[in-house]
Image (tube, rainbow, N blue to C red; front, side, top):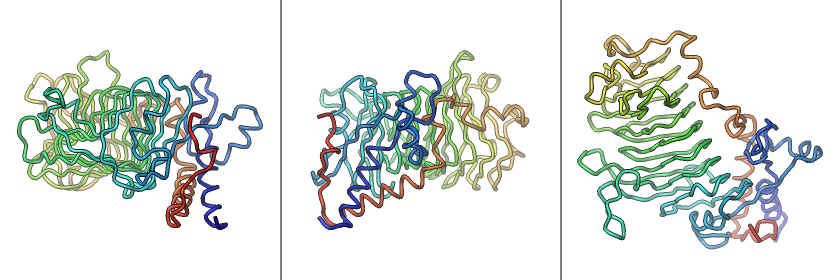
Length: 390
């Protein structure tokens, strides 16, 4: 093996084995299992203090040169009730599979080599049937189904290729379903048409993601912050960006879109009142001229106009003109909108959310360099330190 290849392999192993799992010690017993890109530069200090704990990693490669040829098989290798961060490093390729991460497998990270190079794809819709003849329903259509806590994904694409833009019964087709708590998606592309992201329950952070759909393509009852994301409508005529399902004042849930860009085709509602107390807020976003002038829809139930929390704050672009917005949408003051405009909305004392920016470029560029160095020369990553759970 020549020196340049050896350097690439060494860098890959160094990154995947020594990226620490700590951003700070918050007093939470699970804090050692949080992942943070920014800790790359701090691991020596952490190790010196005696609190460094290396993580496990699994390499997925379609050609069989890694630990697994499929992502699901990699997840299956992880023991139930694991208590440490496990990084699944995914080589470029199109992975046609349905991926389920069960509730009993927390602390999993999926790390791709770029959303244009790693794609997880499938095509299932609500009216389809499983192998036993049972109708899938919306919840059963997800390409990637995350039920575990402390999940992280970065630099990959998740898609459901069903085209539901023509409408019809049973055409819901979820690309990503999330029901675990404290999940983070960083530079992930999610493509679909109807119900693209079923953001079901839990607190979640979507940062610099690209999300595509046509009807209610972000839906559910989670409490989630979408920051610096691009939301692209594929609607042919009319559509809706978000539909929130909060049904009680006791539920501390909602969707907050902060500094996002809304683009695409069709005439779209910003949100629909799937639940009686639905909560959707856009702040400092930019809207292309694809927004329905009324802005919001009550799901055919006028009584919900009195109970939902829908509103915008200092959004810009041709679609941000509020002249003809519905009268029951909220006009936020700076004080009122404040809680929706940072990670405190999702209880971001949990460091899984808190440290993405400082080291992300360093980590991702180094990971790509390592992968490219190995793959371009046809080398197989086969070093003892990469073998998981042995």
